[in-house]
Length: 278
Image: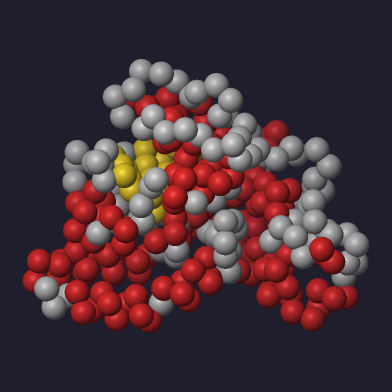
């Protein structure tokens, strides 16, 4: 996933100017107002909101919360072929899911509010989500290679990054410092606070949890009128192994608890109960 910051920058002033022009059309005034209300609650809405107009689905994606698995599942449910590389499902040309702007503001408001539409999201324990992000986006990549999400560390640390070992990955401690410092900014969606992704003013039919993925996907499928369970081979898509990940010390855990306080409270997670402590 790209940094949400660059996405917002590209869609910023010109996109909002276009919205205000649309408000001159009385039929679109209320949909525009609704869009702006949701936009004010979230970061990266046009990147992380996924709609299927014909099925009246709205999936709000939380990066590092089974998003690859869920998008592949939505392909299966629509009879579309899975890509050879599962990660390409994040391209809208592959997922065939639309952003609010793509589906149109009136249809977005309808699907986001109508009782007969289906709105869902999945969340994850904040500590496990951060560790998964580190394992996937930083641990495999020495700083000198610039791979993974290293460019965001460069943006955050600036020249200080040059003083770190370029033949080694960004230390976990440094990643957690960056994540906690930028949890409520649009630097990158993989460690963006979930509270800034999932809007409070939308009524969701399901807020599933990665910790109960099979069970909650089963609930989602029943809401869709499907009798099957989680398709074989999807449960571990893009899962990163925990082996070899440095442990989180008490001081770092306290920083995470403070930076992601809204996530722990809103989605009912205990800071002490993560990983194999669940």
